[in-house]
Length: 331
Image (cartoon, rainbow, N blue to C red; front, side, top):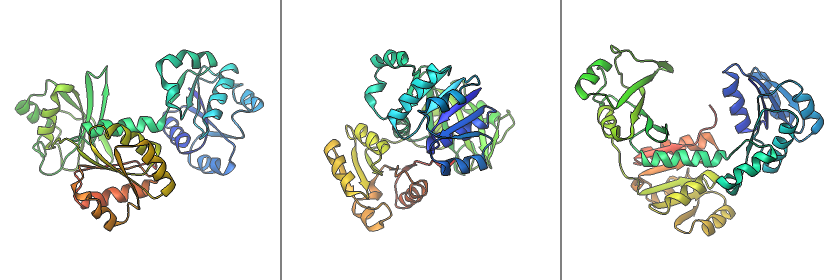
């Protein structure tokens, strides 16, 4: 496929990196040349310096048949305009990144299609929904539903106490019976294995299991994991992701949200009426102790800085939090 990406920010760069590994022809457009240089140096992609709303630029870029045009700049208006132009200039399918939840409502789909936009994405909302799923499946490292929610992919990290460690897949099948779930992959030492019946599970393995939804208790039992109800949640980072998580979880849980920006905290306090907003630094151990971090069931770091998120989660885990979730963008 030939794919054009408008916007060389975090989302655009990540998309290009993933798509380039699948042997697609990738072209990235961005008005800031300094963003394009590291991409050219590290990826097998083409770049164009300029605006994705320039008709002349798009005509040249789309002169060759283009299967997909993705606009993921930081400007919603730019993304919508770019997709409209690209569609009219020959792109087969267009996708625009947006910031307005109203646009995602079902009744608006046909309106945007008429404008030339086939799909709309809201990355922050997608990330927030993934976190919300993990909060409901606390025994898993990762979790994803598919086939109309009839099936789910559970990801389990095995420690040395897991019942299946040092035993083969065949042994586990005989003892526990695995009619409702299947181990489809094992990640070990940065290598992905497709397990055979005589494959041993090892401590430190990340195991990928496809299962019927009613088999989750069996999966947790065999992997030695425990599920719990998340009642007390601490969120670090008043980003859009953090705001969406707090908004949905404050209805049923006790939620605290920490951010270093005082003005942002004041704005969030008006939106999140049932969330305790705290102006502070997640690296301040005394502040975290005052806010009873050790009593938290879940700690979620979505500051926008991967290093801060990882370090704060490690600190939270050390201080007694049951489950930590970090937003990481440097893959």
